[in-house]
Amino acid sequence: MKAIEVKPDIYWVGAIDWAIRDFHGYITPNGTTYNNYLIIDDQVTLLDTVKHDFAEITIENIKSLTDPSKIKNIVINHIENDHVTSIDKIMELTPEATVYITQKGRQGLDRFFDTSNWDIKIVKTGDTLNIGKRTLLFIETPMLHWPDSMMTYIKEEKILISQDAFGQHLASSARFDDDFIQSASKVELEDSVIDYYANILMPFGQLIKNKIADIEKLGLEIEIIAPDHGIIWRKDPSKVINMYLDMADGKADLRVVILYDTMWQSTEQMTLPIMQGIKEEGIDVKVIKLRATPLSIAVKEFWRSRGCLVGSPTLNNNLFPTVGGLLTYLRGLRPKNRIVAAFGSYGWGGGAVKQIYEELKHMGLETVEPGIQVKYKPSPEDKQQCYDFGREFAIKVREYHKNFE
Image 1 (tube, rainbow, N blue to C red):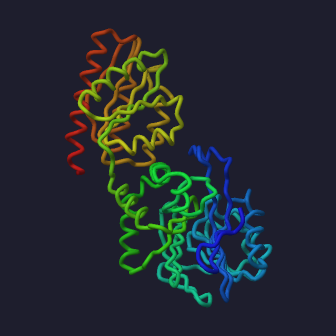
Image 2 (image 1 turned 120 degrees about the vertical axis):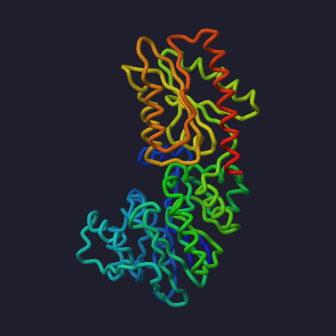
Image 3 (image 1 turned 60 degrees about the vertical axis):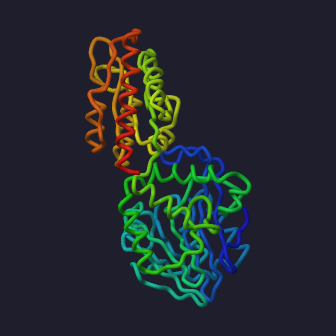
Protein backbone atom coordinates (compact mmCIF):
# COMPACT_ATOMS: atom_id res chain seq x y z
CA MET A 1 0.00 0.00 0.00
CA LYS A 2 1.06 3.58 -0.54
CA ALA A 3 1.80 6.02 2.27
CA ILE A 4 -1.31 7.08 4.18
CA GLU A 5 -1.80 10.37 6.01
CA VAL A 6 -2.43 10.04 9.74
CA LYS A 7 -2.49 13.81 10.30
CA PRO A 8 -1.18 16.61 8.07
CA ASP A 9 2.48 15.89 7.31
CA ILE A 10 2.45 12.69 9.39
CA TYR A 11 2.25 9.48 7.38
CA TRP A 12 2.04 5.73 7.80
CA VAL A 13 4.82 4.34 5.56
CA GLY A 14 4.70 0.70 6.63
CA ALA A 15 3.86 -2.62 5.01
CA ILE A 16 1.10 -5.21 5.16
CA ASP A 17 2.05 -8.87 5.48
CA TRP A 18 -1.02 -10.68 4.17
CA ALA A 19 0.69 -14.06 4.01
CA ILE A 20 2.35 -14.60 7.40
CA ARG A 21 0.74 -17.36 9.47
CA ASP A 22 3.50 -18.14 11.96
CA PHE A 23 4.97 -15.25 13.93
CA HIS A 24 7.82 -16.83 15.94
CA GLY A 25 5.51 -19.71 16.85
CA TYR A 26 2.45 -17.55 17.42
CA ILE A 27 -0.17 -18.36 14.78
CA THR A 28 -1.43 -15.31 12.88
CA PRO A 29 -4.42 -16.46 10.78
CA ASN A 30 -5.20 -12.85 9.85
CA GLY A 31 -1.66 -11.83 8.87
CA THR A 32 -0.12 -8.67 10.31
CA THR A 33 1.25 -5.24 9.48
CA TYR A 34 4.58 -3.59 10.17
CA ASN A 35 3.75 0.03 10.92
CA ASN A 36 6.20 2.89 10.87
CA TYR A 37 5.65 6.62 10.51
CA LEU A 38 7.25 9.57 8.73
CA ILE A 39 6.94 13.19 9.90
CA ILE A 40 7.58 15.93 7.33
CA ASP A 41 8.88 18.87 9.37
CA ASP A 42 11.95 21.12 9.46
CA GLN A 43 13.78 17.94 10.42
CA VAL A 44 12.23 15.01 8.58
CA THR A 45 11.84 12.21 11.13
CA LEU A 46 11.19 8.48 10.74
CA LEU A 47 9.67 6.59 13.65
CA ASP A 48 10.64 2.91 13.50
CA THR A 49 11.43 0.76 10.47
CA VAL A 50 9.95 -2.57 9.33
CA LYS A 51 10.85 -6.24 9.01
CA HIS A 52 13.73 -6.73 6.55
CA ASP A 53 11.54 -8.58 4.03
CA PHE A 54 9.57 -5.37 3.52
CA ALA A 55 12.41 -2.86 3.45
CA GLU A 56 11.85 -1.92 -0.19
CA ILE A 57 8.17 -1.26 0.44
CA THR A 58 8.79 1.21 3.26
CA ILE A 59 11.59 2.85 1.24
CA GLU A 60 9.26 3.34 -1.72
CA ASN A 61 6.61 4.80 0.58
CA ILE A 62 9.16 7.22 1.99
CA LYS A 63 10.33 8.15 -1.51
CA SER A 64 6.75 8.99 -2.47
CA LEU A 65 6.85 11.75 0.16
CA THR A 66 10.45 12.95 0.24
CA ASP A 67 14.01 12.14 -0.68
CA PRO A 68 15.19 9.67 2.01
CA SER A 69 18.49 11.55 2.28
CA LYS A 70 16.52 14.41 3.86
CA ILE A 71 15.67 12.28 6.92
CA LYS A 72 17.48 13.84 9.90
CA ASN A 73 16.17 11.68 12.74
CA ILE A 74 15.29 8.02 13.11
CA VAL A 75 13.53 6.95 16.31
CA ILE A 76 13.75 3.26 17.20
CA ASN A 77 11.13 2.37 19.80
CA HIS A 78 11.82 -1.38 19.79
CA ILE A 79 14.62 -3.56 18.39
CA GLU A 80 12.74 -6.81 17.80
CA ASN A 81 13.42 -8.20 14.32
CA ASP A 82 10.03 -7.31 12.89
CA HIS A 83 10.66 -3.63 13.63
CA VAL A 84 14.35 -2.93 13.19
CA THR A 85 15.88 -5.29 10.65
CA SER A 86 15.53 -2.89 7.72
CA ILE A 87 17.38 -0.05 9.46
CA ASP A 88 20.66 -0.89 7.72
CA LYS A 89 19.05 -0.33 4.32
CA ILE A 90 17.45 2.90 5.59
CA MET A 91 20.79 4.12 6.94
CA GLU A 92 22.43 3.57 3.54
CA LEU A 93 20.02 6.20 2.17
CA THR A 94 20.21 8.54 5.19
CA PRO A 95 23.89 8.64 6.15
CA GLU A 96 23.52 11.91 8.08
CA ALA A 97 20.58 10.78 10.20
CA THR A 98 20.77 10.56 13.98
CA VAL A 99 19.27 7.48 15.63
CA TYR A 100 17.39 7.99 18.93
CA ILE A 101 17.08 4.87 21.07
CA THR A 102 17.16 3.68 24.70
CA GLN A 103 20.35 2.44 26.34
CA LYS A 104 19.14 -1.17 26.23
CA GLY A 105 18.10 -0.64 22.63
CA ARG A 106 21.57 0.56 21.71
CA GLN A 107 23.12 -2.52 23.28
CA GLY A 108 20.88 -4.78 21.22
CA LEU A 109 21.29 -2.77 18.02
CA ASP A 110 25.05 -3.21 18.25
CA ARG A 111 24.57 -6.99 18.21
CA PHE A 112 22.51 -6.87 15.00
CA PHE A 113 24.45 -4.31 12.97
CA ASP A 114 27.78 -2.58 12.54
CA THR A 115 26.82 0.77 14.06
CA SER A 116 30.34 2.17 14.28
CA ASN A 117 29.60 4.88 11.69
CA TRP A 118 26.09 5.70 12.89
CA ASP A 119 25.26 8.78 14.95
CA ILE A 120 23.33 7.32 17.90
CA LYS A 121 21.88 9.23 20.84
CA ILE A 122 20.56 7.55 23.98
CA VAL A 123 17.24 8.83 25.33
CA LYS A 124 15.26 8.20 28.50
CA THR A 125 11.82 9.08 29.83
CA GLY A 126 11.20 12.81 29.73
CA ASP A 127 13.76 13.59 27.03
CA THR A 128 12.44 15.60 24.10
CA LEU A 129 13.44 16.27 20.51
CA ASN A 130 12.29 19.42 18.70
CA ILE A 131 12.02 18.80 14.96
CA GLY A 132 10.50 22.14 13.95
CA LYS A 133 6.77 22.59 14.43
CA ARG A 134 6.63 19.46 16.54
CA THR A 135 8.24 18.11 19.68
CA LEU A 136 8.77 14.42 20.39
CA LEU A 137 8.63 13.15 23.98
CA PHE A 138 10.24 9.82 24.76
CA ILE A 139 8.73 7.43 27.33
CA GLU A 140 10.64 4.29 28.32
CA THR A 141 8.50 1.17 28.70
CA PRO A 142 10.99 -1.53 29.74
CA MET A 143 9.61 -5.08 29.49
CA LEU A 144 6.61 -3.98 27.44
CA HIS A 145 7.59 -6.24 26.10
CA TRP A 146 11.42 -6.14 25.76
CA PRO A 147 13.97 -4.35 27.95
CA ASP A 148 14.66 -1.79 25.20
CA SER A 149 11.06 -0.76 24.59
CA MET A 150 9.84 2.83 24.57
CA MET A 151 7.02 4.95 23.17
CA THR A 152 7.18 8.32 21.42
CA TYR A 153 4.58 11.05 21.95
CA ILE A 154 4.13 13.79 19.35
CA LYS A 155 3.08 16.64 21.63
CA GLU A 156 1.46 19.09 19.22
CA GLU A 157 -0.49 16.37 17.41
CA LYS A 158 -1.39 14.38 20.54
CA ILE A 159 -0.28 11.16 18.87
CA LEU A 160 1.21 8.26 20.85
CA ILE A 161 3.48 6.00 18.80
CA SER A 162 3.05 2.99 21.06
CA GLN A 163 5.27 0.33 19.40
CA ASP A 164 3.93 -3.14 20.30
CA ALA A 165 1.44 -1.96 22.93
CA PHE A 166 -2.19 -1.60 21.75
CA GLY A 167 -1.41 -3.48 18.52
CA GLN A 168 -2.94 -6.45 16.79
CA HIS A 169 -1.76 -9.02 14.28
CA LEU A 170 -4.30 -8.03 11.67
CA ALA A 171 -3.66 -7.49 7.96
CA SER A 172 -6.21 -5.15 6.45
CA SER A 173 -6.51 -2.52 3.76
CA ALA A 174 -8.08 -0.32 6.46
CA ARG A 175 -5.52 1.63 8.45
CA PHE A 176 -7.79 3.12 11.12
CA ASP A 177 -10.21 1.69 13.68
CA ASP A 178 -13.26 3.48 12.29
CA ASP A 179 -12.48 2.35 8.74
CA PHE A 180 -11.95 -1.24 9.87
CA ILE A 181 -15.18 -1.36 11.88
CA GLN A 182 -17.08 -0.03 8.88
CA SER A 183 -15.57 -2.57 6.45
CA ALA A 184 -15.32 -5.54 8.83
CA SER A 185 -16.59 -5.55 12.42
CA LYS A 186 -16.01 -4.21 15.90
CA VAL A 187 -16.06 -7.77 17.25
CA GLU A 188 -13.23 -8.85 14.94
CA LEU A 189 -11.09 -5.90 15.97
CA GLU A 190 -11.65 -6.48 19.69
CA ASP A 191 -10.94 -10.20 19.23
CA SER A 192 -7.61 -9.31 17.61
CA VAL A 193 -6.73 -7.08 20.57
CA ILE A 194 -7.49 -9.89 23.03
CA ASP A 195 -5.58 -12.44 20.96
CA TYR A 196 -2.50 -10.17 20.84
CA TYR A 197 -2.64 -9.38 24.55
CA ALA A 198 -3.17 -12.99 25.64
CA ASN A 199 -0.23 -14.35 23.64
CA ILE A 200 2.29 -11.52 24.02
CA LEU A 201 1.49 -9.18 26.89
CA MET A 202 -0.25 -11.42 29.43
CA PRO A 203 2.83 -11.62 31.73
CA PHE A 204 3.07 -7.83 32.01
CA GLY A 205 -0.32 -6.85 33.44
CA GLN A 206 0.99 -4.91 36.44
CA LEU A 207 3.62 -3.19 34.32
CA ILE A 208 0.91 -2.15 31.87
CA LYS A 209 -1.21 -0.64 34.63
CA ASN A 210 1.81 1.20 36.03
CA LYS A 211 2.81 2.58 32.63
CA ILE A 212 -0.71 3.77 31.81
CA ALA A 213 -0.73 5.48 35.22
CA ASP A 214 2.63 7.12 34.38
CA ILE A 215 1.23 8.45 31.11
CA GLU A 216 -1.75 9.87 32.97
CA LYS A 217 0.60 11.55 35.47
CA LEU A 218 2.43 13.18 32.58
CA GLY A 219 -0.88 14.75 31.60
CA LEU A 220 -0.64 13.57 28.02
CA GLU A 221 -3.74 14.11 25.91
CA ILE A 222 -4.03 11.31 23.39
CA GLU A 223 -6.09 11.75 20.25
CA ILE A 224 -4.46 8.95 18.26
CA ILE A 225 -2.64 5.75 19.27
CA ALA A 226 -0.44 4.47 16.46
CA PRO A 227 1.00 1.01 17.24
CA ASP A 228 3.62 -0.87 15.23
CA HIS A 229 1.17 -3.65 14.31
CA GLY A 230 -2.40 -3.54 13.08
CA ILE A 231 -4.97 -0.77 13.18
CA ILE A 232 -4.33 2.85 14.20
CA TRP A 233 -6.74 4.06 16.88
CA ARG A 234 -8.14 7.49 15.96
CA LYS A 235 -11.89 7.32 16.60
CA ASP A 236 -11.70 6.25 20.24
CA PRO A 237 -8.19 5.53 21.57
CA SER A 238 -9.59 5.33 25.11
CA LYS A 239 -11.37 2.15 24.01
CA VAL A 240 -8.17 0.15 23.66
CA ILE A 241 -6.64 1.73 26.79
CA ASN A 242 -9.65 0.61 28.82
CA MET A 243 -9.49 -2.85 27.27
CA TYR A 244 -5.85 -3.11 28.36
CA LEU A 245 -6.69 -2.01 31.90
CA ASP A 246 -9.43 -4.65 32.09
CA MET A 247 -7.13 -7.34 30.73
CA ALA A 248 -4.32 -6.29 33.05
CA ASP A 249 -6.75 -6.80 35.94
CA GLY A 250 -7.37 -10.35 34.72
CA LYS A 251 -10.87 -9.71 33.42
CA ALA A 252 -12.56 -12.86 32.11
CA ASP A 253 -16.01 -14.11 31.18
CA LEU A 254 -18.02 -16.48 33.34
CA ARG A 255 -17.31 -19.47 31.13
CA VAL A 256 -15.16 -22.61 31.01
CA VAL A 257 -12.78 -23.80 28.33
CA ILE A 258 -11.81 -27.47 28.12
CA LEU A 259 -8.35 -27.91 26.59
CA TYR A 260 -7.49 -31.54 25.92
CA ASP A 261 -5.87 -34.08 23.69
CA THR A 262 -6.46 -37.78 23.29
CA MET A 263 -4.67 -40.93 22.11
CA TRP A 264 -7.39 -43.57 21.57
CA GLN A 265 -10.38 -41.28 22.25
CA SER A 266 -10.86 -42.30 25.90
CA THR A 267 -9.96 -38.82 27.17
CA GLU A 268 -12.01 -37.33 24.34
CA GLN A 269 -15.05 -39.34 25.42
CA MET A 270 -14.75 -37.79 28.88
CA THR A 271 -15.11 -34.26 27.52
CA LEU A 272 -18.75 -34.63 26.44
CA PRO A 273 -20.28 -35.54 29.85
CA ILE A 274 -17.99 -33.00 31.57
CA MET A 275 -19.20 -30.33 29.14
CA GLN A 276 -22.82 -31.34 29.71
CA GLY A 277 -22.37 -31.06 33.47
CA ILE A 278 -20.92 -27.55 33.15
CA LYS A 279 -23.73 -26.52 30.81
CA GLU A 280 -26.31 -27.91 33.23
CA GLU A 281 -25.15 -25.30 35.73
CA GLY A 282 -25.89 -22.54 33.22
CA ILE A 283 -22.27 -21.74 32.39
CA ASP A 284 -21.04 -21.44 28.82
CA VAL A 285 -18.32 -23.89 27.82
CA LYS A 286 -16.00 -24.38 24.86
CA VAL A 287 -14.10 -27.58 24.02
CA ILE A 288 -10.76 -27.42 22.17
CA LYS A 289 -8.71 -30.36 20.96
CA LEU A 290 -5.08 -29.29 21.06
CA ARG A 291 -3.78 -31.29 18.10
CA ALA A 292 -6.42 -29.62 15.93
CA THR A 293 -5.89 -26.09 17.26
CA PRO A 294 -2.90 -23.71 17.29
CA LEU A 295 -1.61 -23.01 20.79
CA SER A 296 -2.13 -19.26 20.40
CA ILE A 297 -5.85 -19.79 19.79
CA ALA A 298 -6.13 -22.18 22.75
CA VAL A 299 -4.42 -19.57 24.95
CA LYS A 300 -6.78 -16.85 23.76
CA GLU A 301 -9.75 -19.00 24.79
CA PHE A 302 -8.05 -19.74 28.10
CA TRP A 303 -7.67 -16.00 28.64
CA ARG A 304 -11.35 -15.32 27.89
CA SER A 305 -12.54 -17.92 30.40
CA ARG A 306 -12.61 -17.75 34.19
CA GLY A 307 -12.35 -21.55 34.43
CA CYS A 308 -10.24 -24.05 32.53
CA LEU A 309 -10.11 -27.85 32.49
CA VAL A 310 -7.00 -29.53 31.09
CA GLY A 311 -7.31 -33.12 29.91
CA SER A 312 -4.61 -35.60 28.93
CA PRO A 313 -4.09 -39.33 28.47
CA THR A 314 -1.04 -40.81 30.15
CA LEU A 315 1.67 -41.75 27.67
CA ASN A 316 4.75 -43.53 29.03
CA ASN A 317 3.84 -42.35 32.56
CA ASN A 318 3.82 -38.77 31.31
CA LEU A 319 1.67 -36.04 29.86
CA PHE A 320 0.61 -36.28 26.25
CA PRO A 321 3.10 -34.10 24.29
CA THR A 322 0.60 -31.50 23.07
CA VAL A 323 -0.72 -31.00 26.60
CA GLY A 324 2.83 -30.62 27.89
CA GLY A 325 3.43 -28.02 25.18
CA LEU A 326 0.33 -26.08 26.20
CA LEU A 327 1.37 -25.98 29.85
CA THR A 328 4.90 -24.89 28.96
CA TYR A 329 3.50 -22.10 26.77
CA LEU A 330 1.08 -21.01 29.50
CA ARG A 331 3.75 -21.06 32.21
CA GLY A 332 5.78 -18.51 30.28
CA LEU A 333 2.75 -16.23 30.04
CA ARG A 334 2.27 -16.29 33.83
CA PRO A 335 -1.56 -16.33 33.91
CA LYS A 336 -3.49 -15.31 36.99
CA ASN A 337 -7.03 -15.02 38.32
CA ARG A 338 -8.16 -18.33 36.80
CA ILE A 339 -9.54 -21.49 38.41
CA VAL A 340 -8.42 -24.79 36.92
CA ALA A 341 -8.67 -28.56 37.22
CA ALA A 342 -7.50 -31.68 35.40
CA PHE A 343 -8.88 -34.92 33.99
CA GLY A 344 -7.63 -37.78 31.87
CA SER A 345 -7.48 -41.46 31.05
CA TYR A 346 -4.78 -44.10 31.47
CA GLY A 347 -4.11 -47.75 30.80
CA TRP A 348 -1.83 -49.63 33.18
CA GLY A 349 -0.32 -46.63 34.94
CA GLY A 350 -1.47 -43.07 35.50
CA GLY A 351 0.52 -39.90 35.98
CA ALA A 352 -0.75 -37.28 33.53
CA VAL A 353 -3.39 -35.76 35.82
CA LYS A 354 -0.89 -35.47 38.68
CA GLN A 355 1.60 -33.75 36.39
CA ILE A 356 -1.04 -31.32 35.12
CA TYR A 357 -1.77 -30.28 38.70
CA GLU A 358 1.92 -29.85 39.42
CA GLU A 359 2.22 -27.47 36.48
CA LEU A 360 -0.94 -25.55 37.33
CA LYS A 361 0.16 -25.09 40.94
CA HIS A 362 3.58 -23.94 39.74
CA MET A 363 1.77 -21.17 37.86
CA GLY A 364 0.01 -20.12 41.06
CA LEU A 365 -3.50 -20.76 39.73
CA GLU A 366 -6.49 -21.71 41.89
CA THR A 367 -6.94 -25.48 41.56
CA VAL A 368 -9.93 -27.74 42.16
CA GLU A 369 -8.72 -31.19 43.18
CA PRO A 370 -8.41 -34.15 42.87
CA GLY A 371 -9.71 -34.02 39.31
CA ILE A 372 -10.95 -37.18 37.64
CA GLN A 373 -9.22 -40.16 35.98
CA VAL A 374 -10.63 -43.06 33.99
CA LYS A 375 -8.95 -46.38 33.25
CA TYR A 376 -9.20 -47.34 29.57
CA LYS A 377 -12.52 -46.50 27.90
CA PRO A 378 -15.00 -44.68 30.17
CA SER A 379 -17.93 -46.83 31.29
CA PRO A 380 -21.46 -45.46 31.77
CA GLU A 381 -20.63 -45.09 35.47
CA ASP A 382 -17.44 -43.21 34.59
CA LYS A 383 -19.39 -40.87 32.30
CA GLN A 384 -21.82 -40.12 35.11
CA GLN A 385 -18.87 -39.26 37.34
CA CYS A 386 -17.53 -37.01 34.58
CA TYR A 387 -20.90 -35.27 34.38
CA ASP A 388 -20.91 -34.76 38.15
CA PHE A 389 -17.34 -33.50 38.01
CA GLY A 390 -18.36 -30.94 35.38
CA ARG A 391 -21.27 -29.68 37.50
CA GLU A 392 -19.11 -29.42 40.62
CA PHE A 393 -16.41 -27.56 38.72
CA ALA A 394 -18.96 -25.14 37.26
CA ILE A 395 -20.22 -24.34 40.76
CA LYS A 396 -16.64 -23.62 41.87
CA VAL A 397 -16.09 -21.38 38.85
CA ARG A 398 -19.22 -19.37 39.59
CA GLU A 399 -18.18 -18.83 43.20
CA TYR A 400 -14.63 -17.90 42.20
CA HIS A 401 -15.87 -15.47 39.55
CA LYS A 402 -17.74 -13.46 42.20
CA ASN A 403 -14.35 -12.27 43.48
CA PHE A 404 -13.89 -10.25 40.28
CA GLU A 405 -17.34 -8.78 39.76
